[in-house]
Amino acid sequence: MAPGTRHENWTLTVRAEGRVDHQRFDDLERALDALDARVTELVQSATENPAATRLRRYAPEDQVVARIELSGPERRWARKHAGIDVHGDGSTEAYLGRVRREPLDVGRGEDRLVAVRRALVQP
Image 1 (tube, rainbow, N blue to C red):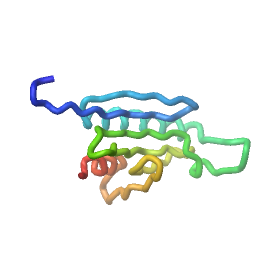
Image 2: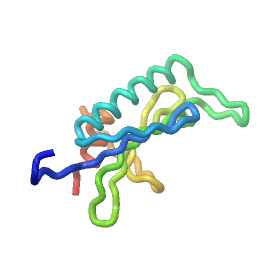
Image 3: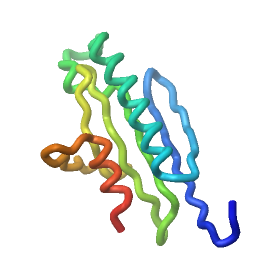
Image 4: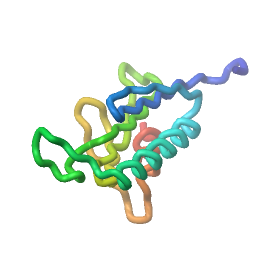
């Protein structure tokens, strides 16, 4: 890293199939590319094999089968968190926050990745 260059540490956390995986990235664009690739992979898997549960009857669209979250560098006592939930039918929902997740509005012509990028780069 060159002198005077600020080091950003973005963490991608993937919770899927009973496992939690972490990856770290030095810049947001690489982290977003990895997030998009994992979401695409998990959506395809959920679409091909809709989720089912034995405990109760939930429709696949009501089940979250994977959660992919990016957390950014610390800024003033807090880290930014945003991510995408993959539902059992392959649908997705972008969110902001960690404990209290707020759905992100995906504007007309936008996709989920653009909504997450916008949420993470806003001050």
